[in-house]
Length: 418
Picture 1 (cartoon, helix red, strand yellow):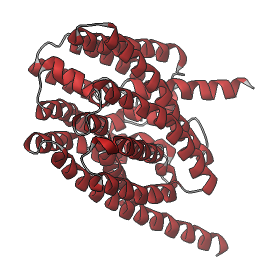
Picture 2 (cartoon, helix red, strand yellow):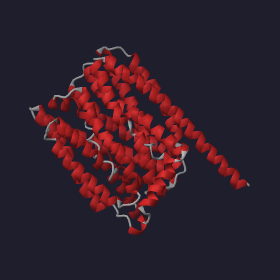
Picture 3 (cartoon, one colour):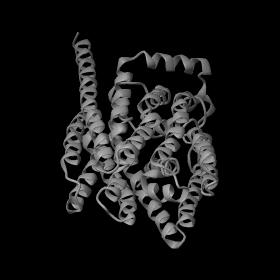
Picture 4 (cartoon, helix red, strand yellow):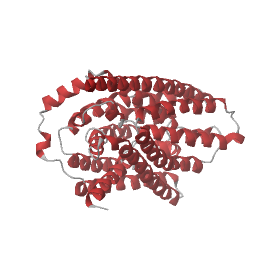
């Protein structure tokens, strides 16, 4: 095993660990929704507004962050992001009041996106050749799952350690925040700094490059694929709470499912990445997964509201998670499929994230209001119908991108033979 191999995959491991762990704080509802809701006495809509506040700032941050990633040192950007996010997490753990928590989530929309997200994607893409993109992003997604699972089980241990559930929720958040800060320190020492001569483009040139990327139809199609798939991912985050509130599963089961999703992330991410590289098309993988999503959400709609089918609901939940993590591992690998240059990765991924992750702005508040207005399974059924629409659109847009790339390949072949 040579030094280059160790350096390459050691860097990937650190990037993967950070990519999962830094988002645990703003997306803590995925595992500790009920506990934090009870500790702060919040409605479903208020929980959704916390996420929407984060998402609104993140939306602007994706756009700006894409340009920053193509200009500044990844090492400095990543270190800053982790330490600031960890400090904000420690502040949130004090439960300073709902309005203050909304401010904290908005600030996390800056610290986890502007200086982090596009820099992480670019650093990952630069680790390997075009032929390796599927496995690199797949391994990153898989390793994120493993690290997330370990962290969430640690957070659960902290929560269960205290008889006072409010204190337990506070310490679960603190465990996460401390780990985030530690990852930030490790980034400073182990991520290779970008050489100054690699950042020679002016801010104006980078801005022009962003505008050029926005004119490309294939970039908008990638945005649509990420938008629809990310919408599905966000809705799957409610399913552990669905098991608790509709099917009567204990809170501990809901939290365990929230943690187990990261084990599925590890499996789905790695299998998805290697499968895509094996068949030579990440887009074909997304097309197949979109069909499977439709089947899964139809299953949730038709299953009756009875504790007797809880195990079937859980199995379908796990199936849906596996499929979404296969797709997530392809999100930014398809930038390479679309024949977009490496030096534009930051700005393209920033713009794709800007539009692709925009469901965060409205979706959680919308779903929360559905649940408050339609108690029980009725509110969740509205969510499942929306998920079906997103799955169908994901299929359509992935098919469109497939034909765009196929047309490019035919043009290239005809040019070579001319």
